[in-house]
Image 1 (tube, helix red, strand yellow):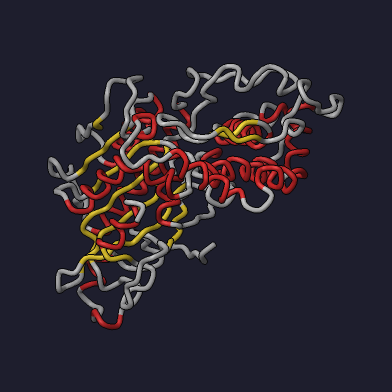
Image 2 (tube, one colour):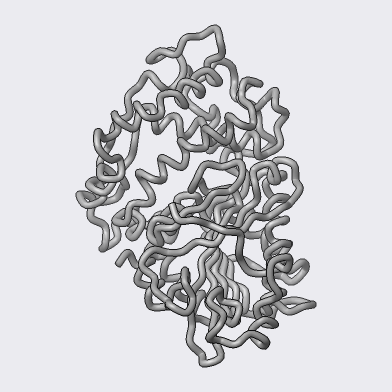
Length: 412
């Protein structure tokens, strides 16, 4: 994992606005990018907090007791989740104004903010909450198909893209699993799986295949097809789902008596987040999968970096964020989450910057709220700098040229 530091646009506590600094600092001496001016920003963002996408959250027998109830339909953005996304929109607006890509007052000019959302209610509602906080009463709208209509922009593999090779994808998953394959991964995670079993099953029910828990069923691999990505079954698959449900319960502010039936602590929620990140490590980050699934969104990212819009936001899913993380080979760690677990509302931030000679560069960071900030509604935002693998800009270490960045998101 690459070393990270707090960074990002608009951090007034750490640095003056980029536009102001660029007028003061000589180009040749500023290796941190402080001599550059931000002119475009693209956010690839996960939707906000939602309930499980199914009711019940997992098949009968996985847990002892009924899963908690939610105030909205399965998979929809919750009211609490919308408030957290709005806090992100306010924070982003402050950063964008400091960078000079939003006006200090009033609404952005037409065409300067572009928002593209998937067709799920949670992604549309996330876009709306974010836009309403970024520029209140300015009438910003998101591009998206009718709610519920499949959108190949966000699930490209299901549309059998030209760059999709199922055999290559399967090989990439097996390579990511490492020596010993999924059986070795199961063994490595047994202690964490046992803790999850204790939360799911309680002290009076022994986990066993077909009775309760997730650890008794070995993980297995189902290969890709022309219209489907590789999948897992068994322990790692079930653990990822269960861990994410517990995290969403906690993030939505449910009483601790309802988070894991009162058997899960905040520390458990964070530790178990490892299973969700592991699923993406195996199924979303490997380059053949990431390149094929992210290709339509890569085109939008490129338009955002080179087109008329100054701010472009993609309101999508954790899979989309993980795909891009894999293509760039970047890693992040947000308080309350395992390494590389995409946080609700979290985003990979891609900035285009230019120097006085007109040369352009790309800087990448991750911005999200800590898990407790989401739960408590405190709105704090964490930003972590990231250095894409394969970029070389001697005068600005950690940055990419535009050509280098475009090659990475194309999977080259």
